[in-house]
Image 1 (spheres, helix red, strand yellow):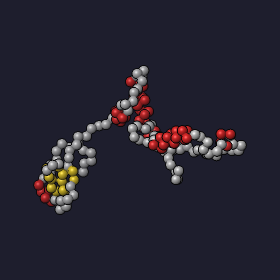
Image 2: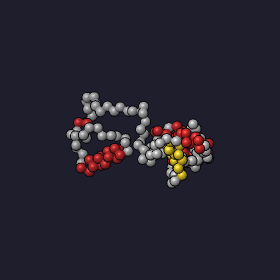
Image 3: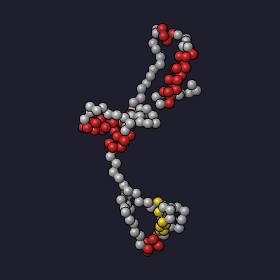
Image 4: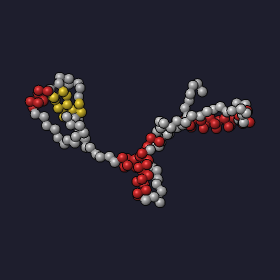
Length: 153
């Protein structure tokens, strides 16, 4: 059969339709049924195929961004190609920030003795206002997927 074919019309001979049990309906939208199963309908709509330029699609996504006026069109095209190549690293709209495999960072949260004086303080020496600001900042980082909750914390 045809795959991704641009067809303006389709013709089936009557004996072919009768032999294979193909019925074509032109009610609200075109569909066909094959065999005796009248419940299973296949869409028969003709859609125009268009060629999409990946650079143009990326430019559409980045339309709110502004390019420097000092860039030539050749430099702008080069920048768009780099942006397209590194597309998974860029957060556009509601996408999570920088979710790329292979770029994991390990953080070690232990310090060799002697500990610096700042680490010898009690666990919550900060004021209520400071704690609220820290909580607000942590919540923002959680929302943009820079950090994630682990366990019951």
